[in-house]
Length: 112
Length: 109
Image (cartoon, rainbow over all chains, first blue to last red; front, side, top):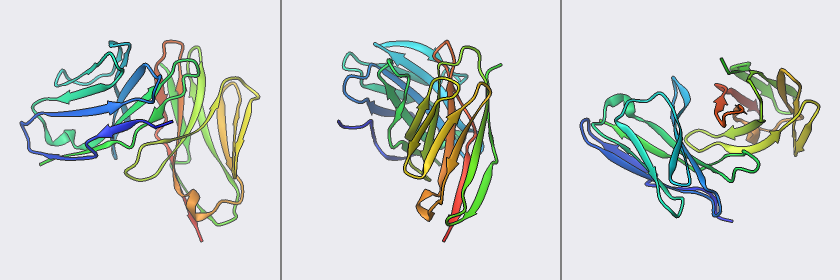
């Protein structure tokens, strides 16, 4: 069974631009969560989608948004990028029955 | 407030020197306790899920245990390839995932 995939793996953007990251969950998984990981803050929860609906949301500004499609694939968007948005963005999916999340390899975003 | 605390923050071991990592949790309605391994620049890799006090899981040199207040990840005779950050995560009754800050393990040859 294929794991969680994320594209692109690396991105370099400049301040003020916007970016869209994509995540494909494990086949059959209906829930996708997004996390931001930085050396200083560790893993921070952005939001979770289940069956195309946002189920939980973390404490991030409205510049961070996401959506989930009917095939469970998810995208997150960050508008008006700031230097502090440089981070590893992780996507995780889980089936629900075991609560176990499986993470993708991440997208490394660098904002210059 | 739900909280997960891991200790120590960093640990250096000689190859073959067994030790334990600690994860203390305060979570209302604990649904599950998870351990992950993360290598630099990569996504966390799932290791174990524990659901109830007294439960134990093993995989190669790793063994995870759970009590009502904490979980331990025991590493027996570690090798340099076990060097990584180990993350402890708890889920609450509201499907929230509470992450610890991790223990950075370095095993020296």
